[in-house]
Image (cartoon, rainbow over all chains, first blue to last red; front, side, top):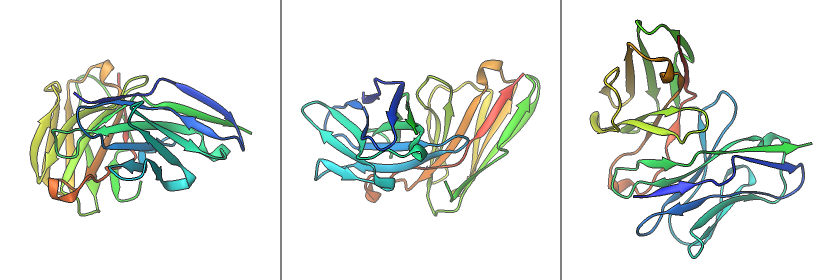
Length: 114
Length: 116
């Protein structure tokens, strides 16, 4: 069975500093990994995905994620955090057996402090 | 968020009521999903429809009844719910079928349900 884990419920970072939101995965075979963001009172918004190719994936709003096969990780990063980045972030892995179903982590709340 | 709409945005109901949640997508997708989002828990996949056919039911209690009359609309009928069913219910859509690669899902804003 495939799954993702987000080890941190909460991440705080000062505005302008780099941010990292962690995600590790467990799959048999090649993983297809996604990051989503959820702002208050909104649905999830797609940020980026890794399917194959370069280990560094660039996405929306200046976010990027680094796929690391040896560490089974897919951490979300941004070089300089904005207050408006404060939100709930979800990592997800594609179901290898189902038609584009996704398994989500528990989410990490990011707070960017002015 | 645009492209997938959900109504109502908020719903308060008693345990004996019957209500329905509605989802509509304007993206030409053919796969639609219902998720339940509760605090401190992963998103729970409830139902999946591909080309209007239900392809997955993740052991959801029968008090939740989905309906997909066409590829653009998805309903979740609710009856005799319990207080622990209070949550944010999210609808999502994407392109089904293995010939579309690995597309992301597009989510609606959700319906905040409170069961008294």
